[in-house]
Length: 233
Image (cartoon, rainbow, N blue to C red; front, side, top):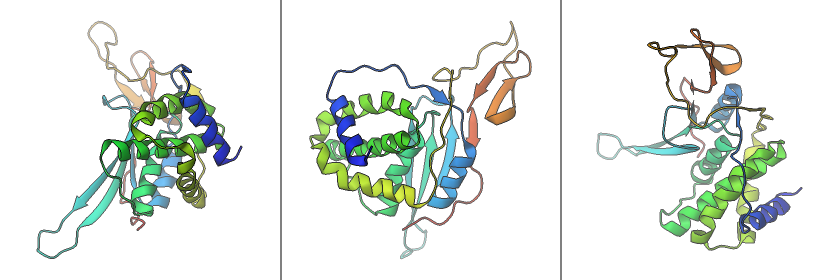
């Protein structure tokens, strides 16, 4: 299915009252995140279960020199709070808009909604291209949420979406086919026995296991250490 066909189909579903079950979670793929970090030149932190935030955020940090006349430098940092297929691609789509294309998103209600729709469409398209079909359960309600404030026709977004998808694919890094796992939306520290708390140790394949009771969780905290590559202007 072409990008245009996927766009129109998703827009049609968002205009209906279709309800979806929550999207399943997946194990972190830290190697994939490291490759994106090095290729796009952006710091990426995968963090789950330790924040009230959902999805992810893109931080645009401007650093001005202390001396007068020094140009300001801008760096970008992506933090993903929930390990769902497409969340990282959603934030990368924002990054492409600001850092790669050099376009600014005005923070009024309409323009912010349009930018969120564009980013979510990009995440949906990339997820569907790699077989992560569960992204539809998040994309449809998400786009439906912003459609009213955006007030745009879906066809007007096609050129920009095709450009973002092409820029992502240009780096030659495709999202992996995630295997869904059963995981609570947020991990909570609870009692392990009457007086003891869980103590987790790193296990295999990105899992953390309590050495007291054997309970296993995924994605507590995986951080991309090291200096990011130069920002793509």
